[in-house]
Length: 359
Image (cartoon, rainbow, N blue to C red; front, side):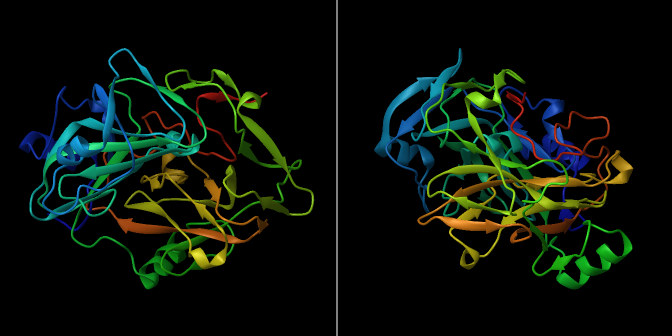
């Protein structure tokens, strides 16, 4: 197997081999160009606290310690804001020795401030699955800004598989950018491709949104249903800066338009904590073809999910807030992001989760 991130056709082979299994069976539309959507099972366990199973322990062992009550998701149920739930997923793994996996929240989950992480039996890290792992998968879900109505079968997180070393070095990334520009403007390359925040929009003064603290429930199946003003406060800036409030959640946008060439994938990584009292990114997979001309794109901005920590912090236009870590694909995907598949965020700018309507 060639080293790199495994594309959709390779995932089909893993499914055929039984390395990826599910009940009910994996659906074709779960397969993305470089990842697989994961589905919620039929029950959620309300637990006292977030946890990792730990070496030699199973998630079921820990659920027996921490479960407060069970919630049936078959007909839909509300997950309450600031509560922690563990939900068995429909998918399970029996990975070959050479294959590892990493999970992440889907874009709409991140934009809802819906903290979603994957845990496994014997796991000592969130969202990281070691080579050869055999066992079930679970989603830990904690709604941070809004209570949400969820149902069995919905997809809050996704998983990406890789064989061997796939991350590009700075030298390789520089060469790739020279041959096929990855970002509009100057490229800041240091352990990935740096990107900055846009607080001087080309038109108007709207630079982002801040989640309102007391809102109704968001039904995840209702697309384009909720007036944005009921859940979000608009943020305007006239001097290229905003002050982040401790504990508040923001949707902002990158200054740069980025592209992911067809033979590569990327993951958004948080920037060094020393640059400020905030965290950027909860959802971080960028598929091959994102913003790229071969998939009908002309560069797409990165939406930034920002949470401020202990102290108010001044965020200024052009400040570097994150980086994209590029990886090579083991082979080019059969289908690219935005080309022949449902891709909600191709060509995006500042954009809320798909459940909301603006204006």
